[in-house]
Length: 348
Image 1: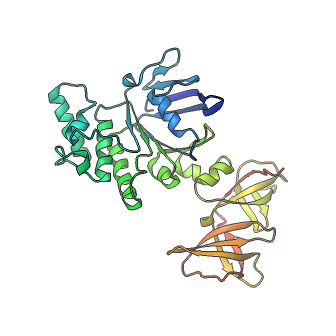
Image 2: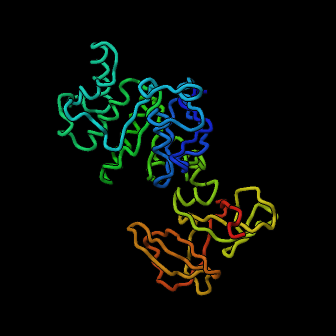
Image 3: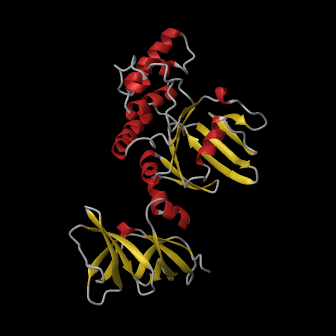
């Protein structure tokens, strides 16, 4: 098993009476990327500042590379072996690319120059060493900031919304390049983003935060398919909820039929059933259980809103050749091999 890169134990930070980070516990193994995602103000950036040493916690412990940096003592930021890439990259405008990358390397000049060459090769900017930051594109600046953070070979790399200043097309391309660089160097990374798609793409694990707590950490696939609660379900992907009742078997009875479900809730319990737009198919029939109340064209797909007899609505993605008029009656089918996730009914 790979050794621990960073471990937080019962970590809590308050500003006045407000909790910014509350009783956070997690461990990141060496060479893995943890993507932290959550709404603005949920504590993501404060958690990074606690790990880096820019903030001191009210309670809890932090270990980096297995060594304590916060418990009975407080290790200052410059001694924590932590690399950081900020939203604005924070390149030194008066230093060229080579000098920016070399800034944090404390070895002899020969070794420092060799390391800078290695980093320039790694990020694909071998011929850019003498250029100034203002001569680079946003994507190139981003890669230089990453190289500067990786150059001292830190125990842990913290990335705080590093792609937020890039336009959508460049952002998609650069995040793929950056993930490749991080994996090539076997870096241990905590990556903060507000973008759920980015979190699913970048992370070996994804952690969802809310009100200072980490609600769930799981693989991208598991956190999408098996969210711990409705908040996670809504934040990772798109989810709708309909009421159901647990049957004796591994099924739940709903107004769209009996569905296979994942969980161990007791029989006859009233539950909320999570349904995602890509889980279902619809077909227009005269006596269908649902009625089309909205339709949005998205190029390859239509996004339909279907109203059920109870008044609940479900969203569904259908191929662009399936065009149903508003007011059409439709049946709803879920893949029988797909298990839905059920939560205890919040209205009870």
